Image (cartoon, rainbow, N blue to C red; front, side, top):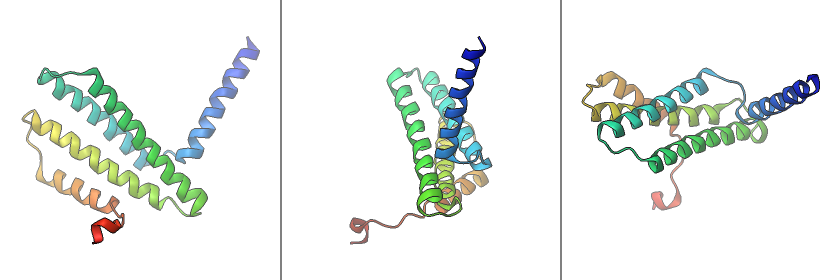
Length: 143
């Protein structure tokens, strides 16, 4: 039994190490992103239930989308830490962009259910999205 516990502990430690290497420290921004993603998903399901339009395919696509967002955050961390050798500037910008995106989606879901939305909340989310969206224009956009 002790041997099984040791193996299990080693597996958990390895998984934790890989997660830490990919995403870095569990920062308040990462926590906020995860909270926004979960709340957006729940609000999307609630809207689908109210509209009587629940679809496992749409739900699965939503989960895949959230996983890809976390993968992008991981890539941003790897670029910051191991390529650029910098503080998590890119990772923070990516997280702020997606926090705003998820927040705006949550607000849209709430508005779709007839819940009034404070203007200040919309303003903050839009500013956060602009702050996180520091990407340069592509060549086709510049022409």
